[in-house]
Image (cartoon, rainbow, N blue to C red; front, side, top):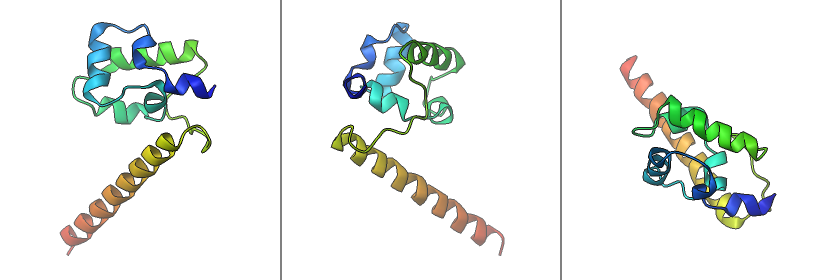
Amino acid sequence: MREIFRESVRGLQLPVRGYHTLDNAGIKTIGQLVVKTEAELLREPNFGRKTLNDVKSELKKRGLYLGMVIDNDVDMDFATELWIKFSQAIDDMIKKAVKQAINER
């Protein structure tokens, strides 16, 4: 299973627009894709429901899905990437809470 996470998203049968959207989002591998949630992907510019449904369909064919949690031993690069994303999410939540607290004054 670990090898599939290193495969290029180009191996998925997607319309050209789907590849371009993933590429613009910096998503190059299936591993980078499956850790994303639907909401994260839909926030990407030009990533709409059609592309989302195409991606989900292709992942399902491989027994994969969006929002997967990948084991720590898959690849140190994935662990690092996940940690960075987690840290960014926490940072965003803190900024939002501080801004809300300031606005409530």
